Image 1 (cartoon, rainbow, N blue to C red):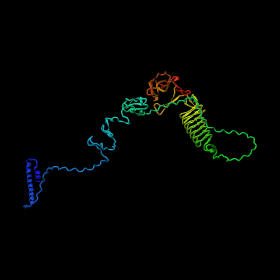
Image 2: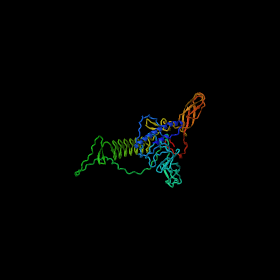
Image 3: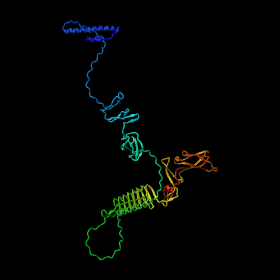
Image 4: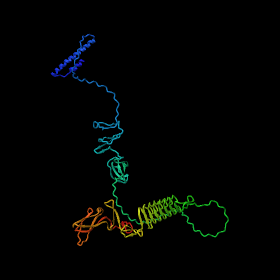
Length: 569
């Protein structure tokens, strides 16, 4: 202990004179403390040796001395042993803040042995050449805005790059063997692309499919063309082979009974006959009729449908339908339909139809159609159509069409509307079609009108009548007046310059009891022109060219179409 005190007290830095004086005082205290410590130690030692010592009487406790200076820090103790490593804590849950590494390009998320199964993110930003895919580590990098893929990368089975179309070939056998990747040729409608340099055969090429660009914008609908006059009837075809012999017709009516002969002598009584007496069935309603059903070999009563004649209405006749004549309405006659005449409405006659005449509406007559006359509307007559006359609309009559045929030859129609053959012409110019109230006759005139789309207003048409001449011309006319002894501006319709060109202008002054003035005009610009002159009223006429036409073609080089006074090329 004494050594420790000496160390605490003696090992002090050197002091100046004033500090020495303070140190001396401290030494006296030290000596006193040391003396007290030695005395206590001696006393204890003496007592431990069993020697008697003279005891002095203990004085009163002195006041507490001032606190001494803090001693020097002791030397550090030795490190203890490491404790046992605790279990690894769990990591997971919902993050509420960004995860940012303490230093750039240092930390790793997962490793080659322990990978995250899935990572779900909205966007990924990486440095160049830092995406590796697959066990071999195929890298994807970037330079600026250019993506860098590994060599021999396939996209959709094809190595990406520039495809150069070198032309078209007749077939794949002509594909060259000295081509390089990206060379291509069109064969038929398909594009064949080289996928390896110097391909040995067709295996080095791939068919990427039809070459087709993007669909362009839909253009405006063109003007509706004028309906041409129906062409002349074609030559009658060669007569076909004779058909199979038809089913034997019904037995003719029994002849008138002859006069009763003279009564002969009574013969001997014969043996009694066998069998029951036959009777006809009774009807139920007024005008019920009896017919022979060859399928049941019995007489039966007809009521809801009417069928008279061999095979008339024989199979699946519709409700309230009528079939009169051999094989009329024979199979599948529709409800409320009428077939009168041999083989009229023979097969699949539609509902609410009428077929009158041999072979009329024979096959697939449409809903609500009417066919009157031999073979009128014979095959596939359209619904709600009307065919009247011999061979009128013989085949494939358009729905909602009317054909009146008195030509004595076959006439067909392929679009809806009213068609009449023949029809007379007239010199009337008030209407394109003229109806005679007294005779009911429909006539057409020779005034040629036409309808075209409006060149500037898509919701309107232009209807013009033709001025005959060596060009397709247009004209505009009107009145004007100069009141300032200088000029006046004439404004034409706003579509004129879009419709025609090569204009001429004529000005005719009104006579006012003095000499006729002299006029001049400007060219037409922005659909208007200016008339120059002195004060005067006048008429003006503008003519222009809409289309060129060939005025003197060789007869051997063209085909004239149409009939009557209006024909065309």
